[in-house]
Image (cartoon, rainbow, N blue to C red; front, side):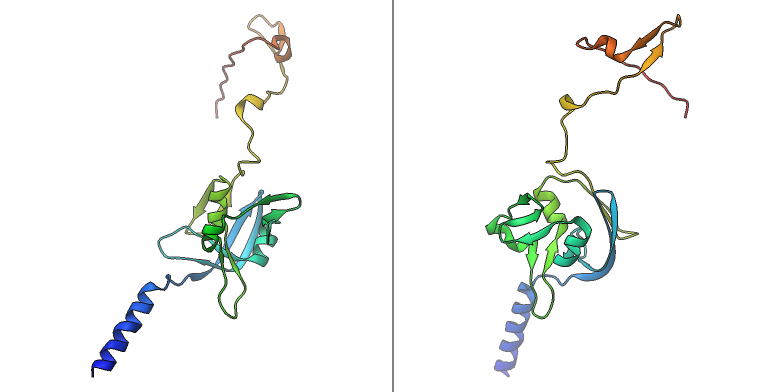
Length: 168
C-alpha cells in the first residue's frame, strides 16, 4: 500500500515540475507587413507567447536559427546561452519550436496580439527604427493668408512650427 502512494506522490511531483503543455492553434503572423498563416502554432493559456516551428519562422520572417543566433542574410541576433530554453524547444519526434514573441522582446520589437483572431502583428525592430532627429519632412509649398507661396525648404536651418488641421 505504501509503495503505491509513494509512486503516486512521485508521479504527481514529476507532473507538477513539467511545463504547461502548449495549446496548438492556427495563427496569422504579420511580420514586415506581410501576413503568413501558421497551421500548427502553439500558445500557453494565459500568455501571449507564440511558439512556431523553425520552418515557419523562416517562412514568416525570413529569419533562421543558426549556431551563431537568429539570422537573416548578414543580420544576426545572438541568443543568450543562459536563456536558450526561452527561445527554443525540441520535443522528441517533433520539429524544433521557436518562441517568436520572446525573440521580439529580445530585439525590442513591439508586438500586438488579437486573441479573437489568433493574429500577432510585429512592429519595427530596434535596428529598423529611426530616431526623430533623423527624420526629415518632405518639402512642400503652400500659400499664406495673403496668397504668397512659401516652401518648407525656404526655412531650412530655422525652427519651424507647423499647425495642421483636417475636417475628417
